[in-house]
Length: 333
Length: 288
Ligand SMILES: Nc1ncnc2c1ncn2[C@@H]1O[C@H](COP(=O)(O)OP(=O)(O)OP(=O)(O)O)[C@@H](O)[C@H]1O
Ligand SMILES: [Mg+2]
Image (cartoon, rainbow over all chains, first blue to last red; front, top):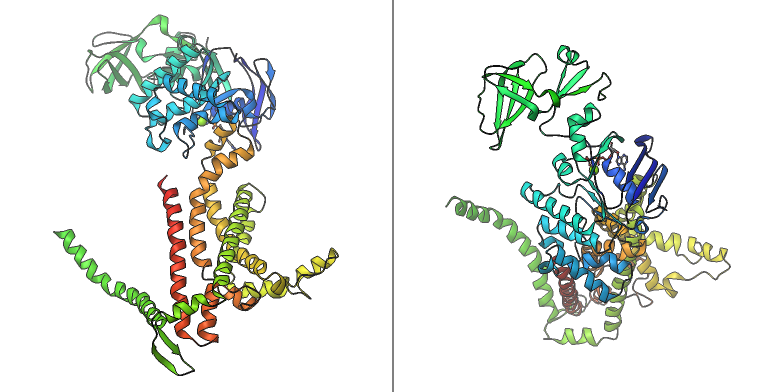
């Protein structure tokens, strides 16, 4: 259950084409993440799948069933919104039971499912509270609870963790991943946080201005980004791009090296530069190196124990096997 | 120290205003209370001394007392019902994106700016007149006998007129409430399989409950004392005499200030009973 196929889907708002013709297949049970910069159409794409927006053209099939013109409720999908969208006047129990009540399920079955969901999500103690009396993380869990009781064929998440603080976000990230392992239901997850994308996804879809730039597993995208946009978007800190002679030597218009693939030395190396800022994270240290004559700044990521200071001259050596080469159109060579 | 100083200074500064307001309210109240225990007939002998609870007993035992209370409640209840139901529907309608929204919204609010006396006269003469009112033409167009609105359907007429005046208020408050409803909640309920009707019942209406109580409370306070609309239409005839109107008649038409004052005290008590009920409901609603 939960294979979603989009064929030549487009979406126009008035006369602006937000989604140009787009094909995408999401396999059964897959955890798919949509990433991309703000405004690239991630939410729009998710809402098209959910049925909250109508496609301008193209078709959406869910489990082989043509659903393009079906209303949201009949597509068998459940959605978790960024603002949680809980019903403020209902208790947690009623919130979770709402979709079942709308489906006219009998009360005994409703109770059973709500209890199970509350159990899974550690909400048992809060069932009689209202959303206003819960913390952000608990609200998020209620929203997830409301989605899982329906036993949908796929879950849609639109930036569900962006309202939570950093620590809670890490926790919820794990919980959602665990939930996916347990339920084995298809999940589509929208985020602009590439750490979430890398850690949770089976498959990442990188979007830019409505176009799919690349689809692949997190490591595929990391190891072999198909163009400069994906190369720059996946990975943190960002990949360094070098154009000009240095790139020409490699037979490319531009080369890209990830910060973690550059060696730093005080005495010898391929490129010479001056450290402007060093950021110590404890486990790692990031150096921002200027005056290399290659690019404005080159970011280097090294072990936390290595220490250089502002103004120190250093030599940088990229790992030969980790250099990405791009042509004039930004495509990978 | 500093805050205590400035606090007492503030009290001192506010005192004149507070005293003025207090006097403004207390003097008429005390005078009403005083007159209600007196036999006071300005044109027939003036102040004729204390009479104890005589006025109170006479006011209640008058044959027009209970009918006037009933009339008051019917008018208030009728107007509340109409304005709330139509107000909700209109607010839902105005919330939809449509062409010329700004103009339509102003038009909907317009009746609120018309003075009660004027609007009642306009309704009475332009719409409800039995000979040349627009409604008579409408009735005749369908081959029906025109209704003598003021005499045959006096309460219906007054309720219609007052509802027309108060509908904008209800609509406006409910519209702002609807607009503050989180869109994602509606979308979530749509995903959850709720039909339009169920969405209204389970999501929109509970969201509006607070606004509805506010409308209920404010309108009741104002509707309990409507006067102009009755004065210029039926002048209290044909069973349209409210408590307020009865008091007016006692004081000015029969020139019995004592009796009218006793009625005034009853009106205060009635208003307070209603207010307590409403506050309870509001309190429960605002707690949530
Ligand atoms: N209802 C609408 N009417 C007109 N344009 C819209 C509408 N909704 C979205 N858009 C436009 O579509 C584009 C994509 O929007 P979308 O919300 O899908 O972006 P997003 O990728 O989710 O961004 P973010 O990460 O900021 O949430 C944006 O340029 C936006 O302005
Ligand atoms: Mg979005």
